[in-house]
Length: 495
Image (cartoon, rainbow, N blue to C red; front, side, top):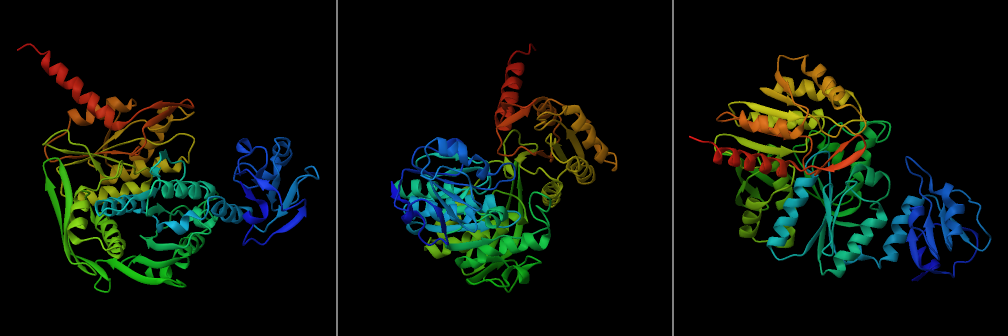
């Protein structure tokens, strides 16, 4: 419980009615979670506007409202106007949870690609060195008290501060988190001055009506991280490097292959073994160590360099870094599943054309016998994605298995037809198998020596949405079921 005036500390606020002396028993921005003696923050969202629920929330006994425009509530209820309720929610949440961000070493990671993998690599290294490190990202948030599946890459500000508070209570000393462009645009990380800010790269993505109006706006949102951290760690090889660092107010460090980078990768070498792909290189500059990662591709070098660059500041030993990176894995991000010594099978979250093209071009560097790409596309989403992914797979894979992803409320066959339309712009060979388990079975049973088989699109997801209903479906489980069914079938064969 806190005084209302205490929660407003540091905010530009105008009291429209009521007293600031009230005792507040909770903070909410979702009308369904508001209660008696709560402070309700009216947020304007893409779908609904919290201001519209003011009367309903007041009837639940809310004591006060933070608004951008006046609301009609009883005169006994306090109403405070602020320029931005999203910004205000972040600062109020910080006070409500007793400023947990000041009790943790904070690492924020932004960029178009690589955020998730880099986040897990950093957590792996720090924990190997004895740090207790929380995590907030696309897949999950880990607080030490619980693990929460993620709905957004970066949660709403109230949840961030709640998770930080749990980490402090669990005895954590640090946190690494993905910071999306939307989070920076919508003030979800307001009030957090990051100890370290990592900028992985930037490409023209997330441009559209519900995201960013232009690449320039996208860039400006991303750059905010380097204006709100103590040390910024940036990919020196990114073609937009000069734009990225323009206006940065932090101390800058860089990583990459470039000789100008503070931490450099040298003598990179692809590693290919039965059922295994990886990469080895020499890190030079800030740290001088050999690095081997069992995640393939040049992008893995960048991700690991970023992780090494930040962990160097924690005083982590070279031995701890090398060992942790060898074992670092990320669910659904170029995740290899051992099924045979003849070919390599992996699961990846690539669910748009840009991600799929990047993945397939990376795998081509390992000179496989064939690249077999299995994927579908989500229903109730932009149809252009289906055409584009079909065309990319047709051009870059040797064989494509078109299957179902999350059809949601659409007919799975209609989605597959759209993918086929993209495929038919190419000479790529393909087959259609709607049932995803049967599609995976086909891929495994028809794998040839030296093949790389990619199950794309689902990644870390462990469900499938069909006709609006969510069903459990984890590709790792499906693979094990298929292998077990094969063993049983072999055992039952009469010679």
